[in-house]
Amino acid sequence: MIGAGPAGLMAAEVLGEAGVRVTVYEQMPSVGRKFLLAGRGGLNLTHSEPIEAFVARYRGAVQVVAAVEAFPPRALRAWADALGQETFVGTSGRVFPKAMKASPLLRAWLRRLAATGVTFNLRHRWLGWRDGGLLFRAPDGETIVRPDLTILALGGASWPHLGSNGQWADALPEQGVAVSPLKPANCGFLVGWSETFRTRFEGQPLKGVALTFAGRTVRGEAIITSSGIEGGAVYAISADLRDAVLQNGAAELHVALRPDSTASELEARLAKPRGKQSISTFLRKALNLQPAAIGLLQEAAVLAGESLAALSNRELAARINHCPVRIAGVAPMARAISSAGGISLASVDDDFMLRQMPGTFVAGEMLDWEAPTGGYLLQACFATGMAAGKGAVKWLRR
Image 1 (cartoon, rainbow, N blue to C red):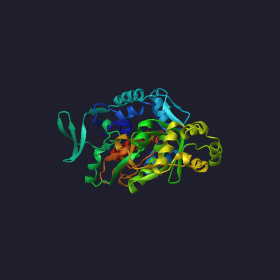
Image 2 (cartoon, helix red, strand yellow; image 1 turned 135 degrees about the horizontal axis):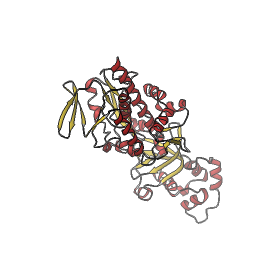
Image 3 (cartoon, helix red, strand yellow; image 1 turned 90 degrees about the horizontal axis):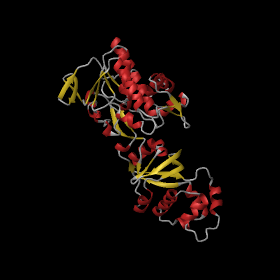
Image 4 (tube, rainbow, N blue to C red; image 1 turned 60 degrees about the vertical axis):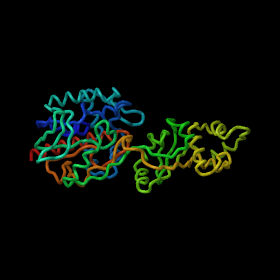
């Protein structure tokens, strides 16, 4: 087993409980580092929405959908409960352990793995294949291991300092395995903010907004960064926006700053006398707009060569709920929550075994699928780890 994240540990558990002797190789000094980071703000294990809507999040990834249907959210919650980590459904429908942390669950999980005889070799970096075996760089030098079967679960390429750096993508094509280029997912974007806007509003939220791109609208919150924009609503729309930017070099995102108000309602409120108030003060009082939202309107006006104060009430009302933001690039992979691309699903069979390499299985974010945040990422990692583990047991018995 190579990789000690959720997918790898789940596969190791399945094999260990089947009586298979399992050794987990991990390049980091400890296991589950990215999993622990995910739990810092409350470990969002999965989501409680109906399974039909849930599996639709995986954008046609057939094997991933099948794995999630076989090990659905209710099964994941039961698994966590059996580890002594009872879960609950939050107001957003997301599912969390009551401890709201990853560390208690991980400790209980490692105790269960130890009870089945699973062992760990840490600080072992996998380098690929050599002389018919797996080549590792260990603290005391290089070593070759020749197992009866291998499961790869090295993660994607986001958060590389935690171990998932995507370097495996170079080794697999040499074995005839199709690998799509890795790219950021659930990511932020680059915007060429003016120095004035960047300095004043970096780190400030745009709350209760609606983002629209390519005919799709997402409600939520966005965060202004020094280099662009990120946040929950941005991540939810990021797949289509990323693909457009990568293909065309740029894209235009539209922000509705008062999405619950119609243009006529906004226009009526803007018809109040301004008196000697600045346009910023007037917008704050008339529409209760946040400073960052007003700044965004000012930024768009400057880029368009306009004066916000010179716009008619009708034009200003339209701009408030259709404020353009020119996206100039995708934020670096290291800042992305997850990654897309990876091993083509056509390269694996229904048991997650590589078609070109009998006896080698793959699970988790190495595979070419993506999903939004909200519990869908971890659910798929657990589920594909479970599926790969069961496939490996079946292969051994066969």
